[in-house]
Amino acid sequence: MKALTFLIADDFPGNLALLRAGLESEGHQVIEAANGVEALAVLDLESVDAVISDILMPSMDGFRLCSEIRRSTKSYREIPLILYTATYDSPADRALAESVGADAYMLKPAPAAALIAAVQDVRRNPTRRPKATSVVDEADVLKHYNAALVHKLETRSNEVQDSLLELQSAHRQIIEMNQLLETRVAQRTAALDTANKELEAFAFSVSHDLQAPLRRISGFTQLLKDSVSFSMGGSDREMLEHVIDASTQMSQLIDALLAFARTSRTEMHFKEVDLDILVDKVIADLHVCSGRIIEWRRSPLPKVRGDAILLHQVLVNLLSNAVKYTRTRDKAVIEIGASAGHDNETVVSISDNGVGFDMRYADKLFGVFQRMHRADEFEGTGIGLANAQRIVTRHGGSIWANASPGSGATFCVSLPRS
Image 1 (cartoon, helix red, strand yellow):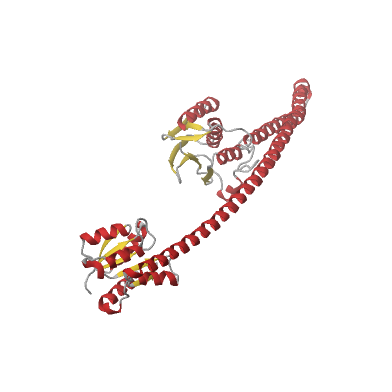
Image 2 (cartoon, rainbow, N blue to C red):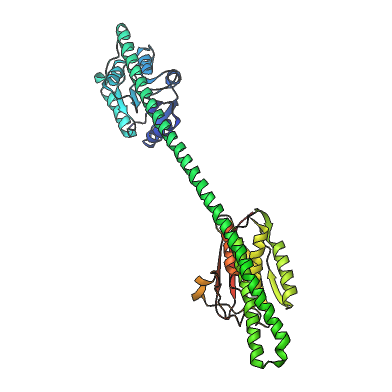
């Protein structure tokens, strides 16, 4: 089949591109025009085998383009004309197309092969082509043309009105939903404020009503021990020591529990945080407290976005655990590093060569008052890791651990990068 040159007219670039791709894939050449005026200018300059035109275009539409071509005295007046439309499909539209000399009337999206076949049919059978209306009947053509346009405008106007009504209804629904949402947010905020006040009252009660009796128990027991210990037997003094130790431990647990409760209520102040500076402070404090020689293996840490005070607490909990659980080692080694995580996250890892723990119980690791070792082996309240997890979660990150008994542990914290 001989390659043809098509002139395609359409004011929508997407339609032009789609039609061009289809025709060129069949081996034909394509020239584009954005409306009827441009199409006539192309016909005056280029040799074209067929015209495929949209109907609704600015400056000059497809009906007028067909009429101008057929009325022309130039060589292209007999060129095959295909009207290609997505909206004009009434019998009156088709009759008007025939009256202005269109050879075929096709609806979008017809395949390129169907358009080419229509053109080939016209070229093979020129005698079957419709004849354009004579100049004498142009007034009648114009009447039909205007009627078609009025009909389309009325249809489009009705569609626009329906769309406006739908938009107004949707707008009202959005306003009502927003009002309902604002009401619910206000109710939830009020309930949260009430709950926070009750929690603060409970914290005060715990701090005052429980701590005071514990201090008295501890104080009087210590006085009793100091005053009569010389007359007591060894077992009696040991029982007094147990009472003092138990009251001290209970006081520490209450303090830890209050700190854990405050963590969820503390207002967060986000800013760029240099983790290396925080680690420096924590290590300096731990070195003074522990008095041990520890090998710190550190890699540079990135800056993250978060609350410096709360992130400092996380590092205190994790690094103090590493120091504590390497106590039985002749040479304690603690490694601190960072790597890239998912979705603009930084993963900070803290590893030690301490006693480790059994991963079968890892699901309890971050629970309140959960411990992996006996209290007579390693001191602690069992709240530090729960507190660390709550802080990290509030930062939008996560915390996890890997370990094995006797081989140390690695804790990882993911945080959003600065």
